Length: 127
Image (cartoon, rainbow, N blue to C red; front, side, top):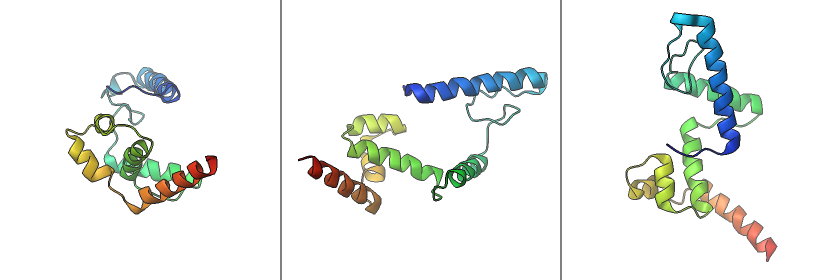
């Protein structure tokens, strides 16, 4: 199990309260799947349903569409750019090996290089 930042933990707690209310309202019809991301009946969402909700959220926020899995890559890349050790990034992402994390998430993709350039600019201004 991964530690969660306090603000994200609060979101999970609030979600559990909503799910408890749904469970009371639906009674035996509620499917206690044990998943965090569920529909109103407690059933796990399909990957397609999660992706659709993600797309609607991005659109509502005025953010250009990126696949949800791309956010995972961004997470790994940003952790790396901020100096988080590869072993910790690998564990956070649930990878079996650090080598896979390095090959898949930490290679110098154009987006990562652009972030690195921005970081360099910020650091150089501080000098």
